Length: 440
Length: 94
Image (cartoon, rainbow over all chains, first blue to last red; front, top):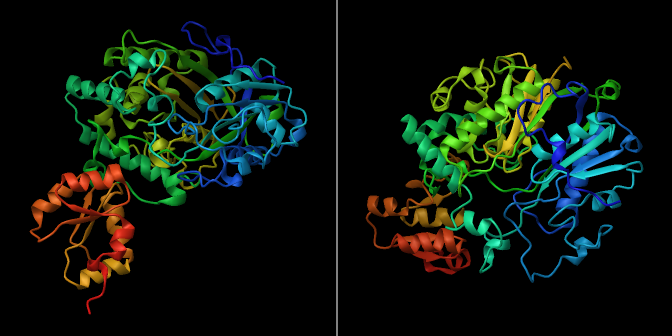
């Protein structure tokens, strides 16, 4: 079996598509997370392949589905954005030989293929459909939802994992060479930290609206608080430390006005879900969470970096797509779990959505009000990457758990959890999912 | 922590300088019942030097880019952990 990358046609990129044809007919049921760690310790049982198998098996068990009932697998094949196996570094043969291998020796160590997973999960005997969702769980979720809706698979696993090696993030791979091929040769011309484009947009945002970086502190404190109530997350598992305003504001700049805590901490993690048709989901172990819509942004900026004007236009456009396909309005959102890694663009997503009626330039003032899970306007109840480490997954897990009533101490109490939205990563270029406790 | 207690008892001014949160650093010291003179973020060694008058300023760290370079730039001497263990400062007085 050769696994294709999802075709463009699977995504809902455009406005005017109307209600999603599979609205309420696809459901998420099972959730599985592997234990997190800061970096890989070199053991076979903790490599990215192993933790992915762990997460997948937990999702299967959580849904109460027999493995031979699963007929689909959607995988994000890339497992890092900045921690690459150093060229010339000896391969970890003891780890590689601990698993059934593919043609790529780093499969399961520094990347993931569907073939590697199937070769090492013999219980998945009936998988007929595999597909790659590039980049993020947000993308893979769109692929999975559409594939189940289209009948390409009826019981489908979807997984995103991250590895993290020793060494400085983003300083290996292509960045370590003397030349960078393709578009990044232009977009990364100045060699700035990854957050610098977001920092530039945020600086312009502050100038335009008369805001400042200090106004981010309540959001950061709230996100870490929520993260510390997320037992699957890195900070909760390893360093249960609050992020008080004093802590946040004392931190050093990485790309001013983005400081250390505005940049999410890279970790090892794996998160998996089991999706099915709404009909089949009725017989599974957990309460189904229905997908009302998925929507994507594939907008290209006009120049090297998106300007604030482009960001605002596109987040508004994305919101219109989200609402149109789901048949809802901003008023229907019980909570939002838009992406936050980097924290300084969460407000762009929030304002684009018009969450709780806020308009462009108002989110930082909104952060000064009650945005806790106990209040009427919960912001990022997952805590996102700020709260649990770099994954781009927590926001989705939280939506499912909130709507299933399984978010534990993180459960929103100020509103009835009925409809949530999650997705990212970037304000220009992302994939989004609308989740609901009911199919209607 | 025993090393820190030893130099504390010898009269050194001590503290921590880290990317860990200020509240997190304080929590670690409190957990070990060690009273420190300062707790600062990674880039604030110059503030420490400005605040405290001392004969020598010494930073112990384990990163070239984030510890040694910052320390030297701020006018501190620098020791790697293994060098610190062997340094006379951290030996009991006879």
